[in-house]
Image (cartoon, rainbow, N blue to C red; front, side, top):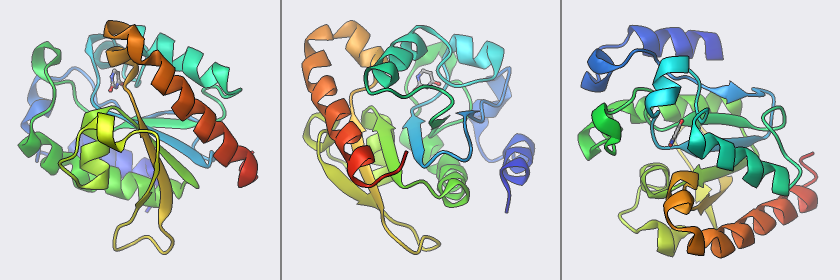
Amino acid sequence: RSLAELETFIKQSKTCTLKNQAKNTVFSDGNSSSKIMLIGEAPGAEEDKIGKPFVGIAGQLLNKMLAAIKLDRNSVYITNVVPWRPPNNRAPDSEEILQCLPFIQKHIEIIQPSILILLGGTAAKAILATTHGITRLRGQWHTYNNINIKKPIPTIATFHPAFLLRSPINKKDAWADLQEIQQKITNSEII
Ligand code: URA
């Protein structure tokens, strides 16, 4: 029912084998009262070590992306689809994602954000329950729904900051997505 209960539940759960190899359960960072919730893929080495999402090099770019639309870690809430680091930074496979899906669904229900921002293809596919890739999903508003949510949540996907580090040419599109998000925040008077 509460974030603290969810965190304890996830830390005690044994449903996902990724947990066995991880140092930490990476639960969240930011402001749990925020109406803007960001969801990434899974922790990397730095996140696993420190126990917080997006504290490594991709996190530094995420901070800059947020700053570009006048947001920061205190004005958003950040988590991942999968709370444990997959070995060697591989992407979580579909079985691991399905094992962790009830956690993120409950997490969204507790936070009750007004806007969901999905970082990268893994989060976009998992949360929007689609096989479409990020190139097709990004830049437009979708809705997130589950059986415990009364009102569908406006949801947008954009490129993952780790992908943007490898492929800076896509920063142009990510910038357009950020502006779309900023407009939505202004129009819906979230902040
Ligand atoms: N990449 C993610 O998707 N999440 C993190 O927390 C760090 C890197």
